[in-house]
Amino acid sequence: MKIGIVCYPTFGGSGVVATELGKALAKEGHQVHFITYSQPSRLDFLNENLFYHEVEFRSYPLFEYPPYELALASKMVSVVMNEHLDLLHVHYAIPHASAAYMAKQILLKTHGIYIPVVTTLHGTDITLVGKDASYEPVVTFSINESDGVTSVSEDLKKETYHSFKITREIEVIPNFIDLEKFKKQKKDHFKKAICPQGESLIVHTSNFRKVKRVGDVMSVFNNIHKEIPSKLLMIGDGPERSGAEAMAREMGINDAVRFLGKQEAVEEVLSVADLFLMPSEKESFGLAALEAMACEVPVISTNTGGLPELMIQGVTGFMSNIGDVEDMTRNSLFVLDKNNLPRFKASALARAKEFDITNILPLYEQYYEKVLKKARVNRSAETTS
Ligand code: GMT
View 1 (cartoon, rainbow, N blue to C red):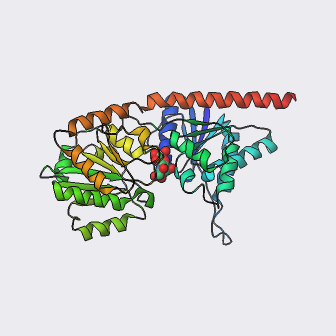
View 2: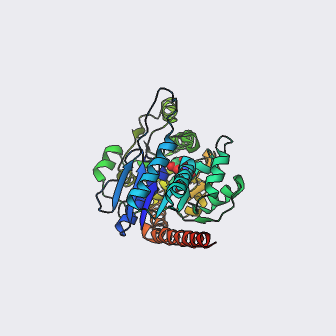
View 3: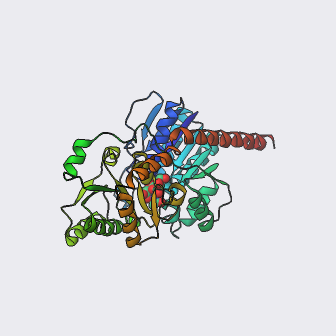
């Protein structure tokens, strides 16, 4: 198959999923064309089936906001035509699904080409941004006009039906992990440098937006630190970082907390971690938690969104209500107890293995086949009528 993948090329979860999916499809022999505004951060290896098409969008004195969506739609049109793509797969509905709709109409009306579009819903495109009145009509329309729609969890599917007037079937295909890349590595020197006295190491990774509740990470860690020798690594960057740094100073724990910023090799940091904290307000799946579990790190999270579909309560870690810092603290101390930690680590890995990319990739391939078949049937019905 020749597949065009559209995504945000940055550190966000949807871009990671899209890029890892594209890489895996290319390894299986499909031709994959990434269409994005910069090189996806995880597009890090050479493969004869992988291509990258940069969306150029020009600034102009009239444009306070350059119309990226138009440049993206135009690029999709040219890539579909030049590369004879079979299908476009867009990740994160805004603005990718509506740009794909526009490209689809141009291809059909101007060139007689029908390009099926699959839209994957990831999270805040539905739960936060998408349902805002300023976007809702376009999001609803472009989801309904997609030839196929997938969501990364049952919860997100439910939320989509609840918040939008959706007329088509949504297929749940959970996120996945490449266990070749995300596995516990021997990084003793790094652990020793961070935790010279054998302290417990707690890790949080995110894009430090409000929904991640990094303030709760600081509060839970502050409580843990009062009870046991421990260190916290904060990975990533975003609007809430300086507030979290200020909290660390005010709590008097800034010697125990390190803010590492954005990191390419998250798996190396996770390899030395004992516990992962994810106190998010919303989390449609929780890919960062799965990455931690694959590196044998138990997770303390909230019970929001799709997290209960990933986590097993009391087995891979624990889930608490949003904002229940005391419960998260109690659970963290229980997991970190040396009599408990080994079994939590083993269970986290066992659960992560169920989301191995080799189990999930065929679900996408089968779904593409289904969408292509349906599009072919619809087209032939249209031309004969
Ligand atoms: O919100 C983010 O952290 C980024 C966002 C994205 O779309 O880039 O992540 C969402 O998609 C991820 C991949 O499917 C999921 O693992 C995250 O749970 C989801 N984030 C939220 O729902 C807040």
